[in-house]
Image (cartoon, rainbow, N blue to C red; front, side):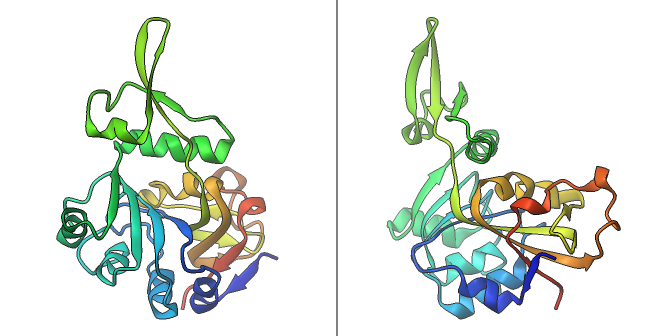
Length: 216
């Protein structure tokens, strides 16, 4: 049986200065209970890799609001004026990466690949995070793989062995990040006996999930 923790005990595993990935899209498919517990635990100086920072003081946006994040790697921040303010004032280091590139960087990190070659972002500020190179006479942008100390993900269901099944928007970044975290903590709507989740529905195998956080 996979080890189950309370949200508070899961958050206590994350030290100051940790690099974390948080899955989801604008708060959908994000582990809200663990985020709240992180705030209560006082974790700070975090490097955060996520698709976005939700809205002001909501979901991931709570970490921005409380100034717990020192560096952010994300695809857009347009719906969170507090993230924009942190970027403009210099209190928050922000790397904006095209969404497909970010997904591929995380996949490369999880699959042990050397990085991503893309033409997206060539000649723009997005290229600052990578390296321009010429291959067979064509210009490409190399982006390094991304991994994190902790992948904080959300799934609809988990079985007692840690196998995960997702619903709808939960598929956004959660399965990829599960592969790219040194320690994987999954908050889930319910934990069911092994065999309840059909093998075809398992998107993340339990062998890579370290801890489960069940419903309150």
